[in-house]
Image 1 (cartoon, rainbow, N blue to C red):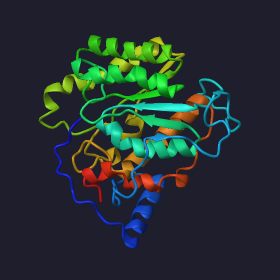
Image 2 (cartoon, rainbow, N blue to C red):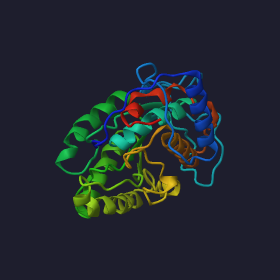
Image 3 (cartoon, rainbow, N blue to C red):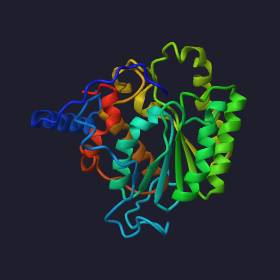
Image 4 (cartoon, rainbow, N blue to C red):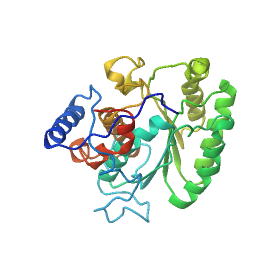
Length: 290
């Protein structure tokens, strides 16, 4: 997904700005209401392929972790070892925070979210389908999370076919699939012709998940963002589409909690990761996050 915003100059990291961002992200951990910004992306870009440290089982075996706790929503007793993240540029700007949260949970993380693409429906999805088998083979995730792309245009039947194909591909590689609905976003002139398809995509994905309850799950992010892109809780950036650091941290926290419910573990407290170096990732500078 391409933004129409003009990249803003990168801002230096004065002590006052660092303190301000720390306070803002601390507020995000507790209240998660506004979109905050950061420092110089050239100094601290997040590695989107992270390997957890401090956990003797961070790689290799996918045996159950000792910090798992029972949950009423628990799918099984195995904490994820490797999470592959998929989506468009909305997912791309969420990836730095998500990677930091997963690292704090001792879960290896890799993002293949792509600006201007990343979807699985229609011809525009060809790069995704070419890349996915390679990512599955090289990274060997046990969980793949796909945030519905704003490019998943098509009829409900075409969407269900594509999401079914995604489920089969991921499951055949030995991983479970989580399909996450996209946050509400501003339907500008680029998206308006496709509003109908954008609205049917979540229901199409949920139908596919309902048919594969043991290996596919649909997560409705409206529980976090609401349904109005202009509302404060949607936490969109100035372009009305993407999220800044606080919105991305809010999503990472929510997603970690959902993952914990699914796989029976308690995620790391947001205070451990929400103000890390990822906040200076260059993707936020392009959005004018301040």
